Length: 67
Image 1: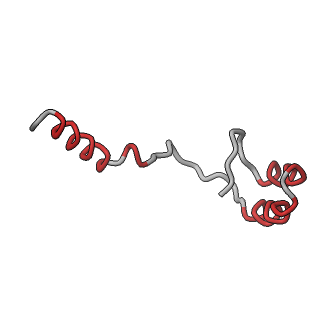
Image 2: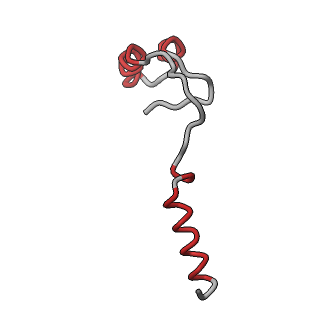
Image 3: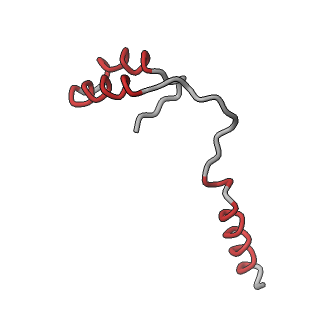
């Protein structure tokens, strides 16, 4: 897994490899070659938007309320 606060791209990862620890530099080259173009689409959803989160929150609040 690679993370960045900046917009990611194969070129940026390849250029940044020299700033990485030596044991990660080769991995950066390999992973840079695997990065493809960005897919079109909308927003990214995370776990906290899943219906199960709402149900768990509701259950916890119900228990805390004595219901």
